[in-house]
Length: 341
Image (cartoon, rainbow, N blue to C red):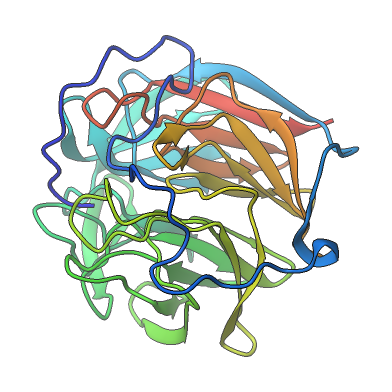
């Protein structure tokens, strides 16, 4: 998302991951922009009341200041946080380095261009940031190494509100908004310099939760608004699966409710979707999606409802960083860990 002009936010709750959610979410829980996609059969994408999987969610640390809508990548045991929003709904170019071992954060440098609502991955040992919002949705592909950033490539069009996932050595950029319409094209790159079209989404979405599992990219939920604000336009409960080998995207299943502005990660081979907003309400729920069946199970909760967090997995731990409580004016400082068992 680019310029928003939202109202003032309440003070974020200390050591919580939010009390409300992103203030740019829709007030209507509409599921589709057009006709509904038929629900999958219960055996393929049903929900179960309980599951043997248990999650341990804990507050691990705090950032030196609030941060949301940032790009997080793991780099040699550390977590780089590139760009995003800081207090006052301000877009930043700062790159932070968070040390999971000590819980400390240091300033590592700056991007070539300040962006928020971007996506990114680690490619060839360097952090690469795709698009994002500034005054407008931008097409820049930026890399960052050492202390400085540079623009190394271009997406096919401006793209903010996207997400990315890594399959093998290739990053896939999915979802997003170009300032006028949804970007349905899925773009692929192994170096950030050479970017090509790899497929299309079944349903164009922005602010989806995205993760890779079982050789596919899973695109969960998302906003449907095609205006600058996402306050209207609805959300979807679709679980889309993109197969890089065939270039095809299918609707593999459905969440129990519509969801946008959530965060996804993979642990133990399964996809976990945390927080976000369902309709106009922020949620605490953590959902598990089985990539073999697309079955959805509620397996845990966050300390409080939140949206627009960053997530990265190191070893057996998912780190959920920052996010929003009442809106982008007051991003959160919280760093959470999520483990199985």
